[in-house]
Length: 129
Image (cartoon, rainbow, N blue to C red; front, side, top):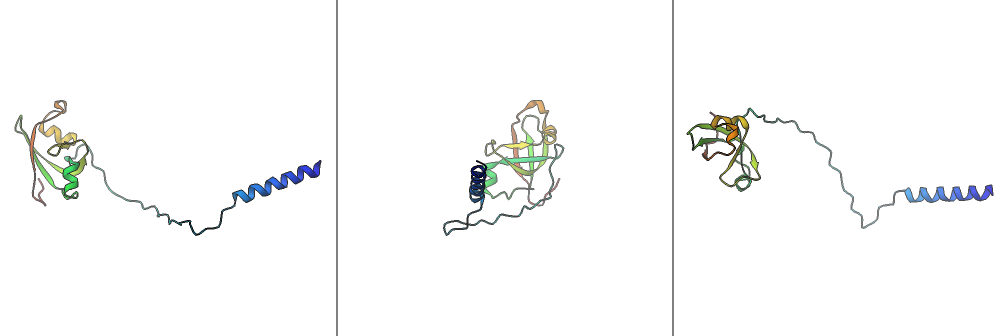
């Protein structure tokens, strides 16, 4: 009986080792090089920065070339004007819409206003308020 148990244990041990062994490469297998992880160092804008996001359609149509370009924005209700720096695209914005950081919005009206009717245009490249 002991011999049978030892035989079965040896057989199953050999079987599981054979299954767990890696297979040799075959002609229909493609080897893929894994990319080395690259860490990036950057910065994040904060709510107090005057940041603007333009519509994704406008952003994509010019390949993101408006990034870091200043925009002059005027609130049509009260005539207040402010400047924001283009830093992002807005998925839900219409082509003529802007999304603003809280601090930029507050230069034009109270946050409780929610949505503003605005007029805006890009300033010349290199402009800074």
